[in-house]
Image (cartoon, rainbow, N blue to C red; front, side, top):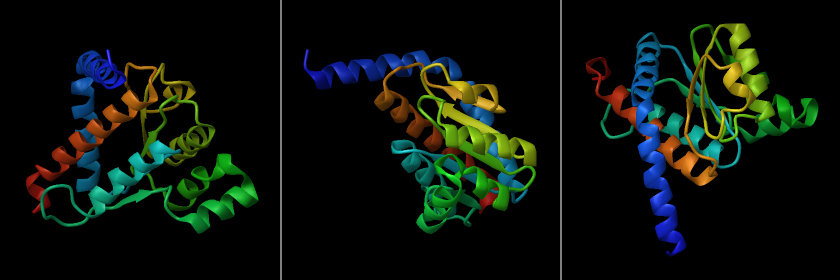
Length: 188
């Protein structure tokens, strides 16, 4: 079997195993919709490929996904290089997201953390800061959810050890949330 066919079969198996969590994806998506209706901000963060998932979610909320609609408050904590390098230099890489949440986050905002392992120290610290400030924390992870699953308010854990498969389903999840957001009548 070719490696492409093997990856395809692995992805199909992962999707099938993930189907039991679709109601969780929808419930968390409805929570995001409710908070956006109340003008709360969605923050997101991740490292490496998960940083691009963070940016993808936020750019679609501020811009648009499929439909023309008003912009929604969303901030990817990965995108301001001067802030990231300042905090990283002065406080360390582990503080790059938590310091931004401390400055910008408000009670009832949402922080979505993308971490395929669930063990990213900078995301764990951001969740701790968010919890202390009254934000709702949502972890998108894989493997066993790592240590962050114990501090997150909500978790969606993709049943895979393969980072590529985990990230592929993270994209499905964020697209599902965007569909829920844009199918709301209040958006027009």
